[in-house]
Amino acid sequence: MNPLAAVSLFLVGTIAVGMILIPILDDQYRRAVDAWASARVRAANPVTVESEADRG
Image (cartoon, rainbow, N blue to C red):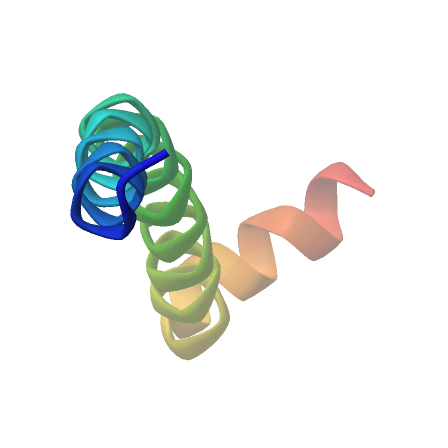
């Protein structure tokens, strides 16, 4: 196989895989950040901490 063709196929394949994986990984990252941020807000809010203690 022509080396230029091999490099071209590699680049096209890498871009195709990236176009599939980036939205999936971005969604997972966004969910993780949202969960972390909401946990921080709950921990920083004394009313929430007291209500959690009352429930528990």
